[in-house]
Amino acid sequence: AQSVTQLGSHVSVSEGALVLLRCNYSSSVPPYLFWYVQYPNQGLQLLLKYTTGATLVKGINGFEAEFKKSETSFHLTKPSAHMSDAAEYFCAVRRTGFQKLVFGTGTRLLVSP
Amino acid sequence: GAVVSQHPSRVICKSGTSVKIECRSLDFQATTMFWYRQFPKKSLMLMATSNEGSKATYEQGVEKDKFLINHASLTLSTLTVTSAHPEDSSFYICSAWDRDTEAFFGQGTRLTVV
Image 1 (tube, helix red, strand yellow):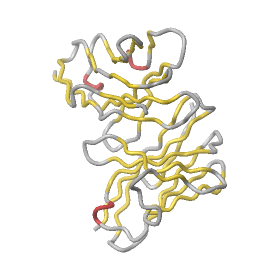
Image 2 (tube, rainbow over the protein chains, first blue to last red):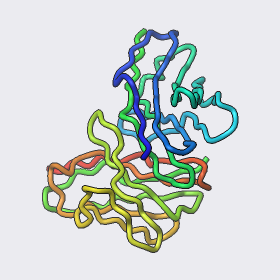
Image 3 (cartoon, helix red, strand yellow):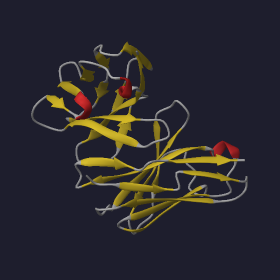
């Protein structure tokens, strides 16, 4: 079975500071990994995804994530936080050949001026 | 990119009534759609997998008779909350994969049962 662990239900940063949101996964087969962002009362928007190939994945809004198989991690980073980045972020894993997504518990990013 | 449209975005209904939520893939066909429920400040819980032309597959613990799913066409799936009660109040989200490469999510439906 696959699972996702997101460390830290809340992460607070100052505007302009580095953003680091942690995600560790468990999968018996090579996974597809995703990061989604959710703004209040809205659906989810894809930030980036890893399927195969390059382990450093760049996404929208300046976010990127690195797939590290040895650490079973897929942490999300952004060099400089913006106020508009304040939202809920979900890491998700999908098993190759299946469409079901398994989500982490989410991390709320708070950005202060 | 592909768009999944969910309607309504908000609905308030009286206890004991039924509510239907629609999920449409606007520019692609989706043989499979997924319905999630999200509790306040919580993650998404998969409720069921909606399969075009066949019965939905429900996750363990989800009441089939309470949450009726119909996937009558390749672009439309509906979730009907029957005999709704206050504990059914939640945020419901649908999703569908476009060409098996990316999952697109609807805007979500905030259901409040009074």
